[in-house]
Length: 156
Image (tube, rainbow, N blue to C red):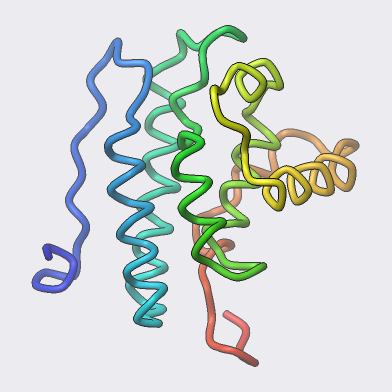
């Protein structure tokens, strides 16, 4: 409701020492799907900005993640499922999730999940890893605008 009335998305700052911020990611992913359903590109892109910022903040604060624990800068599998079940190929949220997992994820985290990731996500992730494995890890430093959705036929 805050987005509708104020044009801003409130968020809680991460607490130092907290390894995951799954509730924040869940809230943002559901909000993205709401804006996607109603084709509100401006609101969609604001949510993308918030997801991007949450990941960046989490990556700076929760540096304690190890190969045994999922990095806080990665949205949980449930968010990946929500986005992949409810959006079309090429959506900004899908592209952001793929880049986050391609550049910050570890196979152990994904194998240790109780439920599998969506097959389409795994396919997209595999293609991204194959296409970019020779690039440096700086690609994830793209601004959030790279992931914005745009109206058909328009370039941002």
